[in-house]
Amino acid sequence: MPATTGSIPAPRPPLAGGRTGPDALRPLLDTVLDALRGGAADRGGPLPAGGPDAVADRIRRAVGDVLPERGVGAAEALHRLVHAVAAGSADPADPACAAHLHAPPLALATAADLAASALNPSLDSWDQAPAASALEETVTDALAAEVFPEATAPAALVTTGGTESNQLALLLARERHAHRAGADAVRVLTGAGAHHSVRRAAWLLGLPEPLALPGPGGGLDPAALDGALTQVPGPHLVVATAGTTDTGLIDPLADLADLCARHGAGLHVDAAYGGGLILSHRHRTLLDGLDRADSVSLDLHKLGWQPIAAGLFAVADRDRLAPLALTADYLNAADDTDAGLPDLLGRSLRTTRRPDILKIAVTLAALGRDGLADLVDGTLATARHFADLVAAHPRLELWDRPTLATVLFRPLGATDDRTAAVRRALLTEGRCVLGRARADGRLWLKATLLNPHTTPDDLARLTDLVEGSNPR
Ligand SMILES: *Cc1c(COP(=O)(O)O)cnc(C)c1O
Image (cartoon, rainbow, N blue to C red; front, side, top):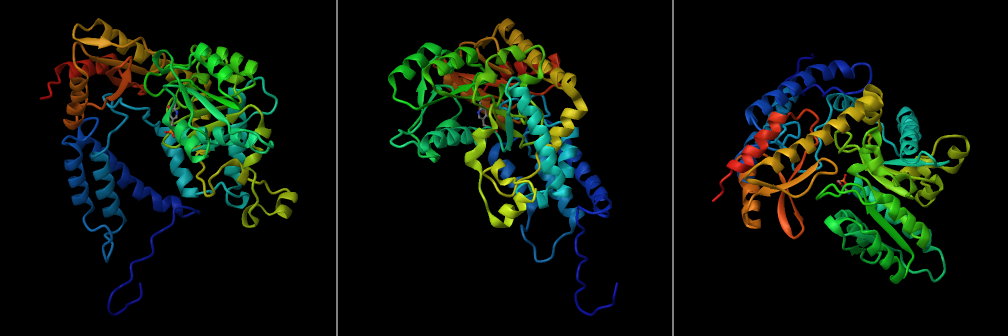
């Protein structure tokens, strides 16, 4: 290093890519992994105790000066911040962290995601992502064929999740009807338990507010839908749900597909949650009729155990995606496309885009159909076992048998206020993370059991925690 007077400039930080990137990464990864292990040990449970103020306080102390004049260096910054975030996380790998569709990611998928960060392909043009874009096309074509086995030209796009996928479904429905002279706006029809992102997509796209039809457990009732399709002027897009967020119910997809065909309505199935069942030999029949939809949302960061994000939006007919086509000279000039450079812009509404397909492809290859089916089947079996425990428990009440991995239950005889207080007390004490859902007019605790390593003992501990909770 040359001798200088005054301050010595720090060496520039190494890059993650290229031939030297892996050697620069290796010691940093050791630091990260140690911090993850230490943070989880310090937390000692599914989430930090003390509630939001205590957590925010610890984070502020760990961060210190957000942007110091002189940096502390990679090792110190990585250790301090990764440790603090790990210690303060709600960790879905803990069996008592079971509130939401918040899956514990597989180690192998997380390792693949590191490669995605190191290589940093951006899927908005071929010259930024030659291999990643080819991988995306190959893998999404195969996954689309899983969703639509009979279709001649299915396709799938990678999204950030069900929210973006549902938005695409409504956008494509709007565009299908937009150019007919005098056409009315598309009317979206859903069950009451449809995901909020459907309503928000309609709002964003300038469509009339979706009509949420009443049905048992928030599901889309065929009789109610038949009535609405007869009475409410079209064009219609029916949005069915395969796995509602609150209860995990799957709408009767085949019956709904019949109705849509009879009334000439479009059908989108929001299978963000339940779509993972296509991977299961045993439970796939729960999705009968899925392949008769025009489009399907499917989140592999739920029943697919991917790090966020790993959404898919599948269409039965790739021509449906035509409205997404767009030319920007700096990314897909016509002469480049004519010369054979793939045009990626029509595969997303986003521009810069991570190769989320890499971790998905690695997972599919590593586990195979059997390995993934085992995870799905094991998870559903865990939820059924938990429901059995609750049903047999003298001081807990079960809402209903689970369809997927969601179990609603509550302390027997508790009011809604007390049920809500139990959830908050367990959260604040750092003991367990349960969700809440309203069903049949009452408030329930919600366990979404996506952890394939959860044991019967873990489940018994969950019931003990709820039973033993005594909030003031
Ligand atoms: C999770 C979920 C969504 C939203 O998906 P994100 O991945 O959070 O954007 C939409 N619909 C259903 C049924 C879901 O379970």
